[in-house]
Image (cartoon, rainbow, N blue to C red):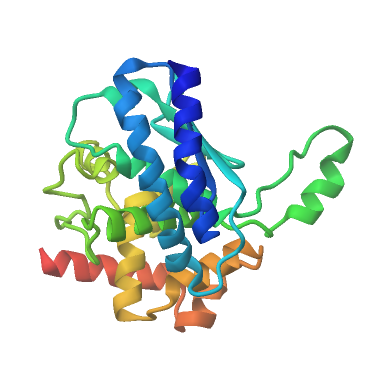
Length: 271
């Protein structure tokens, strides 16, 4: 089953790849018969959305795509992850009966492959001193990385992203369900979005650092109210290792903390 599916999917995608030159060859691997149909559907899904995502993030001059993207189903503990030119999807999560459209997970991980942001090398052993010195402040924050991925997924693919969050007076989410899983999880935990939370304590006024769909909504609000090119500008900064905390004031004449406070205020007033 695996060998036949692997070969059939690869050959089915080869012709359109050569015709367009803008999309990698997509190879999907699964040995689970319950996922055979879904696995086949991922080839045209990724064929359609890879160039769309590239245009959203880079405009008319996107970077060259990789020759091939491999998608594999395994027993990963999380729904999906992207690494190199590969996407790994959880077999159990893909088969779970819920309101979540699992294609959104695939699109989110596909965005990460299109982003292709530089990642820090390991800093250990004899390399640690020079490594830490060269890497300091040169890699953009994870919350922007994940926020842009969810911005693309929920604004353009599912169409469910909104430029405001539904918040109560305590800054807690309300009215969400499993169709937007990250917001639903924060809502279930009664998490306040005024602040962010880390192992070393609360980061007051930095709720944007929750990332994912929280940041996606924030980015959409910024796009509609402050700068229509904000996502592409942030994407470019992340891609070129030029992101710095001061970039917000340079682009929008306000710190990210100030912009977040304004966004929270607008969200509360709307609901």
